[in-house]
Length: 83
Image 1 (cartoon, rainbow, N blue to C red):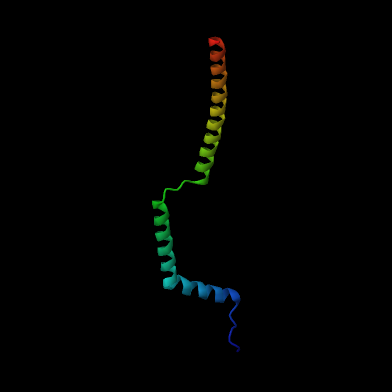
Image 2 (tube, one colour):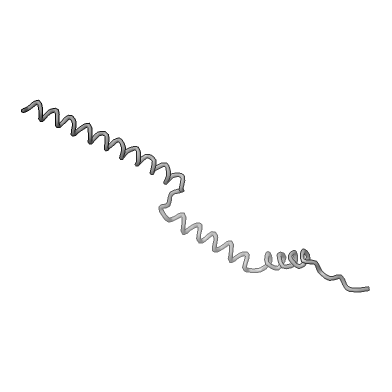
């Protein structure tokens, strides 16, 4: 009787078991935790929050432009009334 030849699935399963039991798995967890902690200390916002604030800023700039134009119009009227 011939010895059974391991299949690719058998080899992959064995390698997976070895990896799960190795210190590399712990190292990966520790690195991820450390990186997550470091990023949490930074003053970052999500892309969604950034996009919302960009829209608010665009509307504010538009309103400011309108108010500046209105102010110039009122100043011109006031100047004309004084003359």
